[in-house]
Length: 321
Ligand code: GTR
Image (cartoon, rainbow, N blue to C red; front, side, top):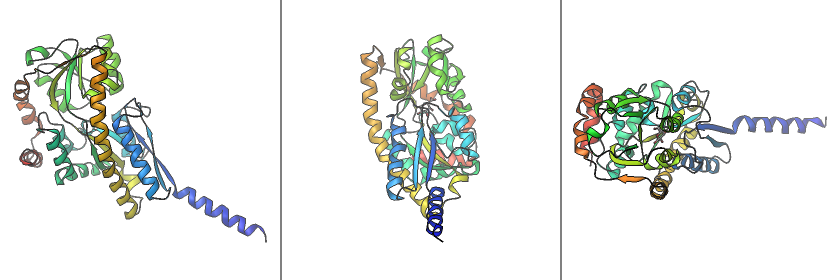
């Protein structure tokens, strides 16, 4: 007769443990303090507080769970809950993700932020659901520039250069349209690729050039600023669909709130990265003939922005203030 309350307690504890969930989220960045890594942890704190401990997110960074391509495959089937990736990693599976990746599309940080915060951004976030990926938020990724053993000022300087690009056909086309030799490769392989000379160059924002220690291998960071492809945070549709509408709304809201935090960190991290690489002897090349690079991208638009839907999206981005 006395065991009944005990059983009830045990049942309550079991029910609680079924409901409380630690979600796992992947990221490729090495530093625990990298803006995207810190932003997802920030989202976790907000979730934890507002759900009274029901939800937390544990971030597995340093490519610990695999490359972006590999982790996305896991998220699609619900084997992994969440993923913070560069939008380029989605290019092959969701056409709308091509749009913000396009070279020289955004005119400025303000333009990029305004577009991604508005209805165009929301449309692109939704554009991966048929692939089992629910887009929750965009994070800043600055702008991407080429770094190599020599300065890049004109198109002629990249001719024949073996440039590592992200694993996306669009990126292969961008580098080839510059006259380079595109070499697609997972993030974690780039450092060794640069060190051993398998590749001559890579392209990324300043915090990645610093954070992945690529500046130890190549010293000239040239401001081609050819793309502002943002970061995207996705959650598995298989996981999301099991949540109540209130919990789904909580995930959407806390993800969006973490964007403000990420952007502030992003600006700080960019300044810090510039300081670190300059102190270590890198040269930042500013006098780049960007107009020449931009003009060379016309065939890339012709090849990839082929459907009326994509053309409409590009135009609405260009028309946005
Ligand atoms: C970084 C981005 C990563 C990854 C990396 C790369 O800017 O944050 O998600 O895409 O670039 O080029 O592999």
